[in-house]
Length: 482
Image 1 (cartoon, rainbow, N blue to C red):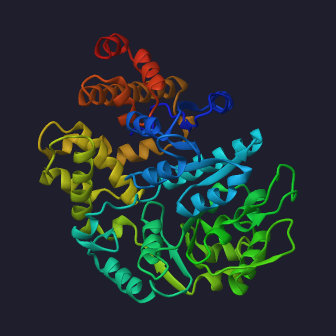
Image 2 (image 1 turned 180 degrees about the vertical axis):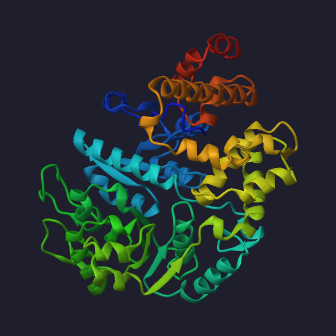
Image 3 (image 1 turned 135 degrees about the horizontal axis):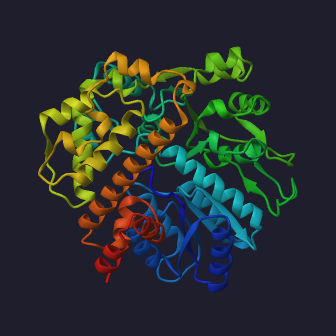
């Protein structure tokens, strides 16, 4: 909820073997994560309700509720998190099926610590990058002035819907461009779900989250012994997506040396795994996305021109929110309903002055930024309609006069060290006040339940308790949580 609160990632480890839970917990805590554990899927679902979990690592075979059913339950959540499956060598086929169902990756027992570390970092990095994009819509989104699960009726979106109508059920490659937070993944999912491939896998890869030296094995897979740590063979994302759709987000992050192999795979629909000699043929519909100007990357020698033209068969540009301000009331209405239900409030609308402030804001973070603002505003709202005072201060701040702006723009050398230190202290005090306000409000909203307040604030219970102690709220914590 708040970027200023501590952000240790929280991982849920689910396995019916106590020793494996202990080993994974010890390693992940050494790597700096907060770890929760569960012995079966039912216990895991309860913990998902109690805590804000960033990643689930689960065994496939467990009593009560197995890993596959847990995966299905997680992917059905409004804001799903990555799921990594743990599997024995004899059940790799089931793990591959889990990947096609929506699992992020899998690790095999006995597992290599470095392999676990790499997969976890990749999953967490992917989740962080996804947090800058527009979240997937709720099931009612189509009733709120939009189509294909995309909310809006501005001219630019009407043009987008027209292109979707024409190309959704074709094998044609699409390149989606737009700033972060505009909803590029929503378009990719719309292309898949409105095609004859809808019952086949939709495989997403955020290329910016993959280390350069792992990109080839990520896309094309590898054979046993291909490199140190390759104790078995593993299919790549192209192979997993066969028959369905492969979505390559942040396509501009692919290293130049890998772009030749990607181009060949697109043109020939075939490739070899790393360390393999057998040619694998696939039937994949590719959707790529980028928030960078690929033509500038071509001019700089960072992106191949032939690959660009192979990707850019059908270009689709998603406009930034500042270019479609007429859609803001529809988006606000959707997010108010979404967070009113999630936070169990009674907010049903927004006052005109608050809506005007939202309409005037430039929204550099686009729809994702708007969503975060509305979530915080609904939390802080004490009435049945959002007011301007419920919004962050930067949304209703009076513009500074030119003299003040010019003064602020002077070089740092013109400011005395004492004044700089004073400004830092003012900023620190303001952040502490806002942190305190967020925590107190979250505690009020959850009836003083520290665990639920931590989940609302998207931090661990321990992290919240440390922050409360720092802000002098410890007595309140003990009193409310008793």
